[in-house]
Image 1 (cartoon, rainbow, N blue to C red):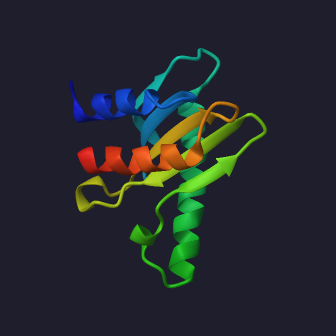
Image 2: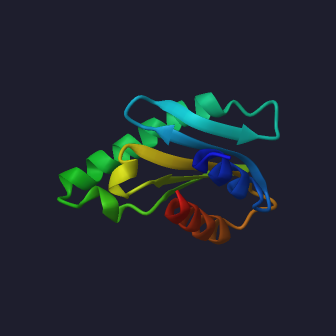
Length: 122
């Protein structure tokens, strides 16, 4: 099993996980996706998540902050959480983890911690 597939499977074990992707924000292309919902278009979510990550990194640059200071971004929707975590290790430059969670069942802090651990395993 590849490291990407392992990371996707591990993220989907979280309570309330609806879908997960590892995305290259330079090309907007997901390197891998996993979802148990047919109505969740992770390619589309990844593409739009790329805009969010790029905007935050650009804002950090304007403030004189380093990109690695950005741990994650939490987007709160009426029924979902989207957690975006840029990968900061040099070998993962340009990548981010995207996790879509059911707002009723998920615990965002637990998900954020799990994404940190997944990043360390990649």
